[in-house]
Amino acid sequence: MRRAEDLYRAASKRGQACGGAFLSDRQQDLARAALEKLGCDFYHFDGGYPEAQRRVLVLDPEEGPAPVCFLKIESTAFAQQKLNHQDYLGALLGLSVERECLGDILLLPGEPQVAYAAVLERMADLLARELSQVGRDPVRVTVCDRSQVQWQEMPQPEIKTATVSSLRLDSVLAALLNTSRAQASALIREGRVEIGHIPQTNAHAGVYEGDVFSVRGKGKFQLKAVGGRSRKDRIFIEFFQY
Image (cartoon, rainbow, N blue to C red; front, side, top):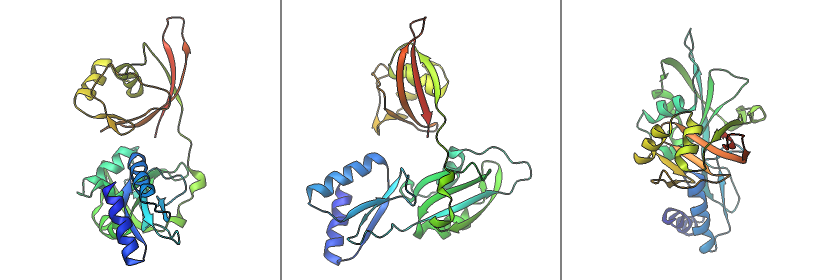
């Protein structure tokens, strides 16, 4: 919230657009609250494409775009492995770049073994030079404009179903990760689990339909729906991974 206030003061003083870093949805809510408290009416969020989750705060009366471009990351391996979101994110963070410099990472169904990573423009050339491998695959990286990515090809997340004994955090987390409750409880104790960007420490805490789970090292999930009970008195749930 303080960073949003500082950007507002800088934009007002200079009379020109100011942009920040990539923010999570929770951080966007906090920035929005801070700016509305100040009476600021010339801000917006931009992540490089319409459905972006991580977005940059831009203070600009003209509503110009954020300084965001994309890295096109293509595997050049002869025998390619199946790379996922975590592989690409880990490779980029392995270059010692701050998470706030990185936006969404998109894997399009029409382009297998290709990912597009939204990044701040000031970091794009450096990352393109330094990123040479994702997982075990060598990669070729080029900087491209947002107009070069075909957003209409973005897939809808795959909805999965499971049954849980209760709507306790450890029980639902075990279903999301397809693991045991003991392993889910261990992740909670280690401080690796957040719901709505709030750290969770109680394995017995209740969870609710619509909750968004972030599990460090495992990914991000949403509990989409809670249904009825099975004959064995277990609760049906629907969820997806971002």
